[in-house]
Image 1 (cartoon, one colour):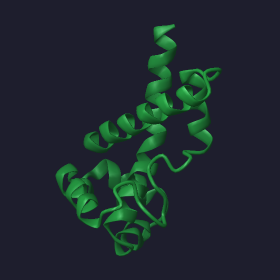
Image 2 (tube, helix red, strand yellow; image 1 turned 180 degrees about the vertical axis):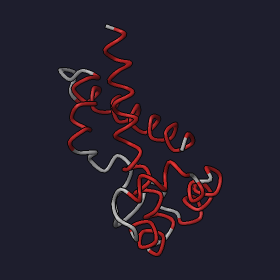
Image 3 (cartoon, one colour; image 1 turned 60 degrees about the horizontal axis):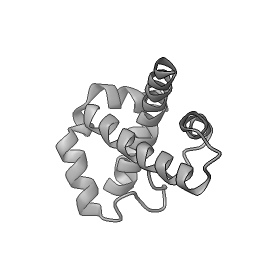
Length: 119
């Protein structure tokens, strides 16, 4: 799960930079708290993907070992017994986006915690 957590953190950092560049009244904490409610397609969406490439999504899934990662499988099992299988059947791009979405709350919480200790 660490590879996906690292990826999600990078995508969130990019999103924070973009949002603050666009609206300089926002703070890092504002953007992170907003992401807790809605990830705004930061990781792609179920109709597309973050990579726009099945091959790239497959490569990252393989590199991360996601389909054998107990922590990731636990996140899927919280959604139902067949959620992982049904997501896997939709293809690598969908699986990649869903894993990012499932990992995101943990990463956002970690980032908010880090943010509060820096203040």
